[in-house]
Length: 387
Ligand SMILES: [Fe+2]
Image 1 (cartoon, rainbow, N blue to C red):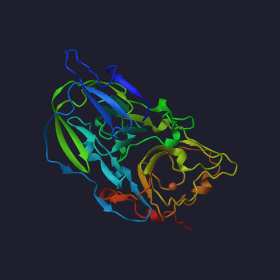
Image 2 (tube, helix red, strand yellow):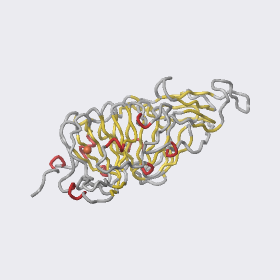
Image 3 (cartoon, rainbow, N blue to C red):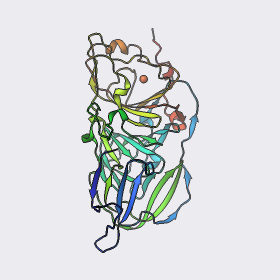
Image 4 (cartoon, protein in one colour):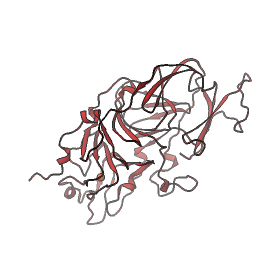
């Protein structure tokens, strides 16, 4: 996230005296996710962000893997994940490997009495249903249907929903989430051929400073263990910050599709990348316009990546029996392609209204117990033509 941004009050020179009206010093904090070797921000707290008062007994929240190895096309009914009041408890890991965890969640309540920090993973939260505000030390970030929220690992946040009806797709990335390198200039600006630009990136909109002392619980996840850590000051006591590392939102509806005379490959849909996986956005678009074009995709062998599609809305042209919130997993090692009948049906069609998020992982995914509970039977045989 190379775009420089600043909010609130900051001193003219970094690492110099910056005093409150009463003459005492603000506490400067450098925040980055890759040591001192990448983008960072400097935040100015009313109180040191280090004042731990007590900790509780940690507990295990790591995914419950049910199938470590397999070679079969799978599909899951994402909306069958039951709504749950608490945000953290509502998150159900479905597909996991060492690079990312893909979870579904239907939280009903805002986080009121605690804060959350994922110490291991950047979080990419795709909002399928619901709207509200993501609150961090950097300010308040309003979100709505279709938004990707990118939260750098280590960011303390609270998520507040307007209603109890929320559906989220959450991708935890154990390496920093970035825009694809080929979209960026050497200085980090999004290039003219990229399907989105800086104007589409929404940083936190409003910085509200909570200068408060008391008991503040930050539930912190590290290596699959949740630690309840109590602090003596409010985590969002920042009066100002600047830098290039902060949470932001990007709407899938601001992704400008790249189309062509003939079928365009998945990389034209790419939105984010991290170590060993990419995230793509399939958005409503005009179909291919060669007079003999086949808009449906060709069969493909994705021999070096597991392909996960999360169907958001609209009609998915190459699949049959696809419903909102459904997930398909086409593992590396066996080819897949359009369902019977969908190739002919796609010919002559002018546009598609499909909306989907794709995650391609370069190492195999494992299935959790919760995935098996919402699995559609017989998906592996769904390419068979019924005569
Ligand atoms: Fe595919």
